[in-house]
Amino acid sequence: MNSKNKKLLLRYGENPNQKAHLISNKKKSIFTFQISGKKISYNNILDLDSGIKCLYEFSEPTSIIVKHTNPCGVASAKNINKAFEKSYASDMKSAFGGIIFLNRKVNSALANIIFKNFFEMIVAPKFDKEAVKILKNKKNLILLKMPNIKKNNKIEYKSTLFGDLYQTKDLMPINKKFINLVSEKKASSTSIQDIIFSLKIVKHLKSNAVVLSKNKQTLGLGHGQTNRVDALNFAIKNKKYYFKNSSFVCASDGFFPFTDSINILNKSGCDTIAQPSGSINDRKIITFANKNKISLYFTKNRLFKH
Image 1 (tube, rainbow, N blue to C red):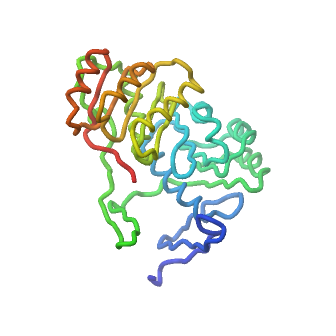
Image 2 (tube, helix red, strand yellow):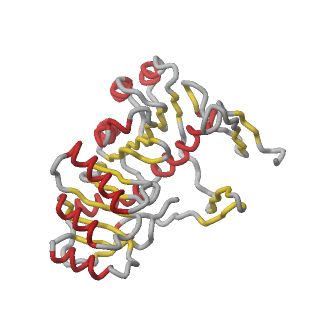
Image 3 (tube, rainbow, N blue to C red):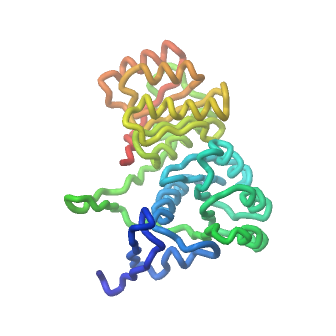
């Protein structure tokens, strides 16, 4: 270990019977930014890493609720209070015990809303004094006043049984240039914004990953399934439970290899789909989209996360 690196002991590892520590080479550690709550754990740090990376995709007021390193509710709005309310409404059941990530100051009104429910941690760039006073009444609730961490490192790595794997980070911006219309029908400007919003989230979900959204609010998320149809069905189940029959857009981290998935989407009210190309059935998918008047976009890159 480099003499400049700090070894910081954590509560425990992934489970209480496992010991854990954090090696940091930065002047300020994660503990520097904590203003309240119990000691940060190994799992907390993994969730923090995942949530902050996803939050960096957004510039407008955005709220992300994370469970087990995956977003479970995401929304953008004109103000952060509305963004949080929408993100929580996306999946209230999964949000229980989750971590809230906000890219705007937490005010007292928002603190009062958050206080009514159970969360593990709140991460935001700033907190009003009154908000801190309210939230500190929950002694175990971790509050992190988190600045915008510089993303200088363009390489990321993981430890495996066979050695450390290294790769360049995917820093390509997700915007209108990231998608290419391949169907006859062009999506509305609102649906295009929702597709871009969805792709920013799908990039940070475990594959197979599917995001359903409307008005910059997630309606259903499918992730970590071993096939794309199950991921899609899981997302649609959530959408039907909380949002019934509203129309929506869908983003997928990988291509839909058969028309079964796009047929499910069509019957469920999806009007716009974004996916990467590369399947031998790309032409069949395009034909199906044209026949059913669905706007279909191919993404510039695949967005797998393992």
